[in-house]
Amino acid sequence: MGAFIIHGGKPLMGSALISSSKNAILPILSACLLTAEECLIRQIPGLDDVSDMCELISNLGANVKVNGRSRKITVSAQSLTAHTAGYELVSKLRASFLVTGPLLARVGTAKVALPGGCPIGSRPVDLHLKGFEAMGAIIENGHGFIEARCPDKKLHGATIYLDFPSVGATENLLTAAVLAEGRTIIENAASEPEIVDLASFLVKMGAKISGAGTDTITIDGVDKVNGTEHTIMPDRIEAGTFMTAAALTGGDITLKNVVPEHLKPVTAKLRESGMEIIEGNDTIRVKGERRPLALDIKTHPFPGFPTDMQAQLSAYTCFAEGTSVIVETIFENRFMHVNELRRMGAQIRVDGRTAIIEGMETLQGAQVRATDLRAGAALIIAGLAATGTTEVLDIHHIDRGYEFIENKLQRLGADIRRIS
Image 1 (cartoon, rainbow, N blue to C red):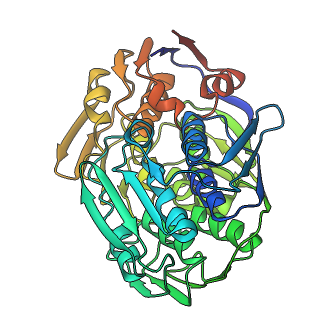
Image 2: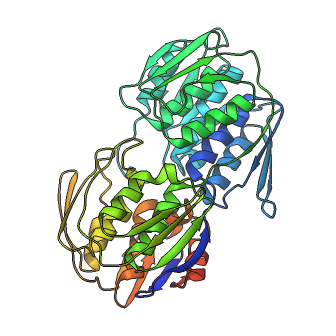
């Protein structure tokens, strides 16, 4: 499985290039199934989740070619030879369920195992299914699979209101609506930047979409879409993770290939805690000039504070002056990192979906376990600032979402190495 060995206490200095977004490329790879023509995706991140998604769409009949040197993927789904996504692959990542929409739109049927991913809480697919049903699909659920089919081999447009602005449901319904007959309107849609990137890709394919990035997305169905080329947006969560690590270690780093607009909630909280943040057109400089001040944080859908940064800021506030309060509103089981931080001496009390953190001047290095992707990032941040040696186990979770994280941190001066 592997582990990271971290000797803390070294400030991060220098510059780092942020990779492309994991959360953006996965739905875009799924959307390549909508066309028989070739799609070229640039600036791919070298992540386990990307490899798993490529394997999944390949099993459905797509010809997938990965060029790691030039960081490109070409997908040609000229003929889809299967419509079943089995449990072995689907259980590895939550985003695998996103092939349902393109399969329904393209071939009128899809059978997909219930998805896996990080165990951060209940993430039901009922919003996806209600939307598909509104568009004319018949849904059957049994034996660990969701099976959907269109009686007329084609979906039809509908007005769909999402009870919660789910990113996954918005992405799945958006791709399904592209080839549906008539107009589809998704109300209370997610507005995350990754939704905008997906819509941009679909429009390049010939889709007719308006309103992406707002809470109402309108899609006018077309008969077919074509192949296209697309460059994936930067990963705002990786950028936020490095910003937090630099601030906590008293560092001074410049991050390149970022969209400062996407990082406003993280920037605001770091500034509130006493750090200096300098924004450029596509860069952010972080100067950790003091021990952080305590923070109150509440996660919300975009443009609120992202749940994917909650664990990292939890680690950050363990070192803060005063008492911090962090409220998690998205996932009910996203405080799994708390017990691991306590092993390092953190003073954290959890009451339901609220964590109360009494800041300390430092934590002590310890052997800890990455229970999920973002929890693993939080433990790395804590280890970089802690006294002594921290060993982070189960780092396969971290490899799902951070590309060569130890190499990037080493170039910034961190004492971190991977052991097998």
